[in-house]
Picture (tube, rainbow, N blue to C red):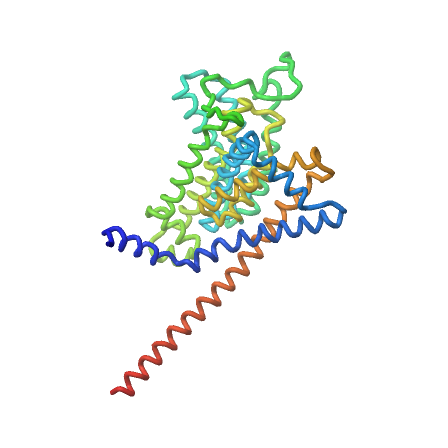
Length: 384
């Protein structure tokens, strides 16, 4: 006996293009497989057993403490990927997330160390400061693009270098760091107020960042805004064809500037999981390179929240388990960097191969449909 929900389920399954779904998954999977093969060949060439290396990584990665560390890193990588992906969906290459998140984290840490408000005011204040600074820094590239036609790739790369210099100028004793009378091995801002501590979830493997929940909310909001709002439609339309978007009434310059600002604001959140849950200050040892990791994560995740989540988990797993290679065996830790680098290269090649295959399959389907229609029309003529 069939129920009333069965037709609805069949209708939902029929709407899913299985071949298109498989093609979407094939590219990142193919990139990872090729990367593993290349890394294995390099290990074999150096006289080492690649299966042992991967076994060490897999065994350690299954431990509870490694799983918590992976999730904490993945939270940061996910935010970095989302920030980059927002620009990518607009066909904007925001390479400047590195400088945007570092400036955002520095100013957020400084403000958090200067005020002591209740947690429900302190935490939002710190997050807003980080987003405002990140968005404002990205706005410079947006203004240059819409007013002078400067490529956002060039301007954001240069802004990264300028941001590094600005951080160096501000993170000195007497400016954003304590005076020289304070003894410290490294130069850093003062510790933030205890009320700025973001909650953590106590587990068997350690403290899991509560920021992971906020990251999930941001991922859901990202997808809803792009797929369910007029702004998201205009953004995607402008990314595909600025001429067509302008013809339909979209203010292209405003969309470009808005997209850069939003991407920069999201980039400002990249350093927040570590800042609010672990370090509670910004110093010379604050993790760098997260913005560039976000580019790789966004590419591998195909600019979708679910894909970015899996890519962030993969990159975090590789980073966490890499430290065990020289400890448990005669393996260079750099092999993981090779694997991550080849993934970025291979994913571009894999996407192009999959795109060409998908185009060929689409042409075959159209040809088959036209042939079927022609045969049907011939039969009707014969019958007439």
